[in-house]
Image (cartoon, rainbow, N blue to C red; front, side, top):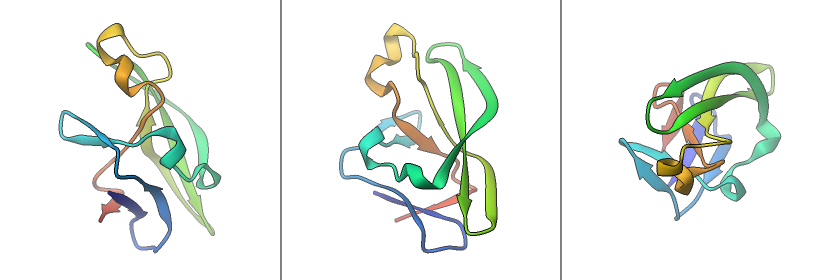
Length: 95
């Protein structure tokens, strides 16, 4: 599974070892090209996974806010996706 930023050929993540939760592919931290990310101030709370943090993607002069999320301190039920990164389907292209 490969993730490209919409409208670019920039690979944001690439892995054969994603974890699918609620229809979203979560990529291992080592599979994410962190050079394209900056921390976002956004966060959301999932009743069973915990509080999600977000990343913005910056490629050339193009900044896409809240393109991806992850759980730095997930609940016990979601420990298997700790720090794994998922992407918004309307902001990226999956290959």
